[in-house]
Image (cartoon, rainbow, N blue to C red; front, side):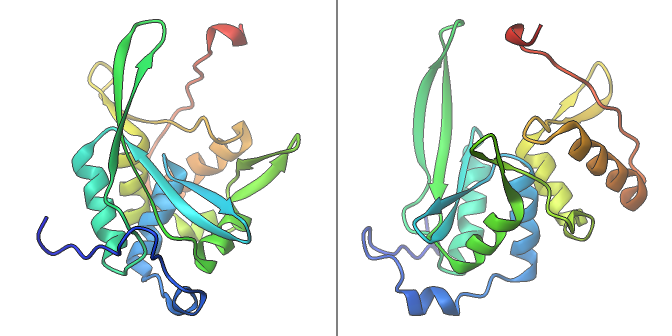
Length: 191
């Protein structure tokens, strides 16, 4: 697509170049929203990269364009398909990853905690400051849906503990005057 700058595969950025990368405040807010949703930070050696996998192709390319505007992505989003069991339906996802950066490593240490020997997402202590209108919009775009029957937006929060969900609900109420309820959905194995 016109206006995109690609770094040749395998070239990446040097450590010196990575150290000079400044993530603008607007993109920081986007990243917050995406981490609350379907974005993940992945530790690779001593540095971390940001990974995204979305069903919406246009949204994936929009995000790639945002990251590409500061030169921290290489290849454009790629498409992967998988079969959903037991329905047999096909799932299509568009993925991309950023380069590893000290900025993402800092975020990784704030957003992940050790739980039974496994790193899991956790809300950072300053989530009330991080959850801005822009972050909220990207969180909903990433992990939200509209339920016509209920006339409500549903945001999936399965990555977070019940206490963390209550913190998020409190912020939505206090900061954005958004009323919410917590709905529990159990998998067959949870019953």
